[in-house]
Image (cartoon, rainbow, N blue to C red):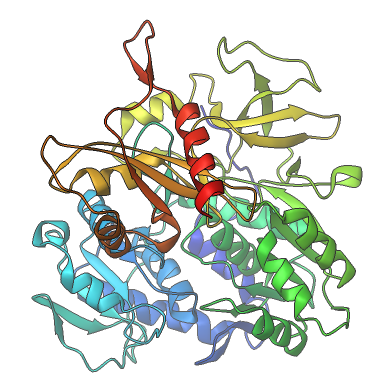
Length: 528
């Protein structure tokens, strides 16, 4: 049984939004198109909920959100929650295979996207999807609502919000499914991590109090995409604390440095590379207003980026989190402040480090697999009970798959257990890329590993076993991957092999990924 939030916490996202209503005229959220105060943002939420409701979206329906950080994105999250609908977050870096899979598996009845983002042509990708992938869709909503388009792929395109705030009765409920984050496991394809409203709202208040987003002058720099738990948890915490959010649709170090100074930003979170870029654009001037910045180390040169961030006055602190327990689950303290892990923001959180094979408990200071039970923990994987059962024990503890050790104050994160690859700042299952290549004619088998030649971050390398008589071309396979998946998932090299290295085990032959990684690294060292 999962721990839960008690008295004094918002029970759902509607109650979370009311926390910010104490000063209706104070700034709430801004993007390049508009700046809204708290009263105006609440009105935008009601107008958005009204548009969804008029189109037939109701309690327990699923609405896909596929757009960059913006006022409209945040309003859509709260509008869905008010209707009791489930928001399916889609990464803006996803392409045809990934988007189609999410729409098909989630059975979303509506999609909120934009015609106004130069970096990605979302409508073109949507139109190119196979009909089966979008079979459940009934409506597409345009954000902002001035696209001028009325139809796409046979679906009506409606304005995301109108002039009238006719949202209807508030159906937000603590136990109602709230949103899903997409994650990649090491043994299966991407999973949809399901959270209820109570967990999202309660965690937001914990984070706001822990890192000071409830201070009267706090301002959040919202550059990390809201589609993932990292950006989402920070944005929800800002709402809980009443701190305005500066929405950034696409990160650029120079623009970020300018906006941080212009808006007197006090809080920001992101990957180590983001902090390195901001520090490089500081012009030698410290960011004096910044009081807290939390980072996750995603790249091999993280230490250099964080050292530069410290020198620029960004005050970086290590964070830990996951889609399952939410980002900003813990914040590093004291001598370990630049390491992952730290102290949970909720004091009721329960931590354990267990032997990955036996499941037996390990003493503090001994490395093992981290298990967590906390009020911020997910409900389960959407429509995947077997994966949920494997991940959550009968005592409510979630098996993170992370290597860590307990300390007197909390824990220190060390590494990821298993075969998941860290590419472009994301954990990626090899099977995601393998499935795309495997679908091509002439491919008998495929294995993907991450490798590095010692220069830069790891990149994916694919080993492909052709069918007998098939003529495969590396460039054509890479071009196919480029159309189907995000750029950071496209294999740097595709190597054709007659067979994979295997080893016999009690459960049958297993591919030796360690051998493939060695082969990939040797190839990259030889060819660059």
